[in-house]
Image 1 (tube, helix red, strand yellow):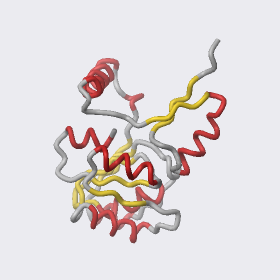
Image 2 (tube, rainbow, N blue to C red):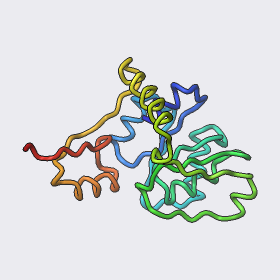
Image 3 (cartoon, rainbow, N blue to C red):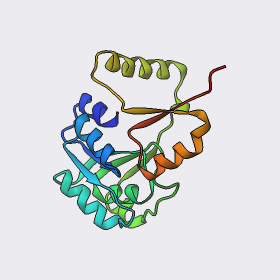
Image 4 (cartoon, rainbow, N blue to C red):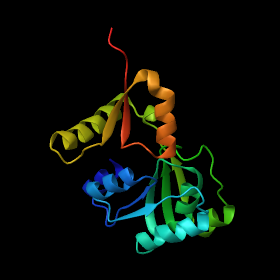
Amino acid sequence: AAVQLARLAGAGRVVAACRSDAAVYSARRSGADAVVRLAAADEPETLAGRFRQAADGPVDLVLDPLFGVPAAAALRALAPGGRLVNLGGSAAPTATIDSATLRGGSLRILGYTNNELTAAERATAITLVAGHAAAGRLTVTHQVRPLAEAAEAWADQRAGTTAGRIVLVPPPD
């Protein structure tokens, strides 16, 4: 969804970071100009180089649902004054971020949660996204799993072996 929304917002070049073949396929189908494949052995500086190469240079904005090593690498790929907006931590709950990288690029790290939106802001955002979905401009690959499989589903999501988002469904009454 982030790739599609970046396109709709007029981003010049969109690069996705993915762990699985299914995620790579989804990112390309959604309009990513390039995909950087993530590996468990990635080091921040090496991964940052792959991000910069895929983006054809430094980037201005990173939407980061992963955190961990991918976020540390993304910071190193930012242009001066660039921003990283953290949306989650599916790769790791912590990231090693060095002061020199932050200060050297006058970078910004922002956290985002829908919980901070007012009711009016939430309604506006949902209306915008629903409008794009209804018009066919925004789709989300997903798989439906029983609520009883929540722990396994989360482990699969963390491992990057899912095909898109997971929708957990409670048992019928």
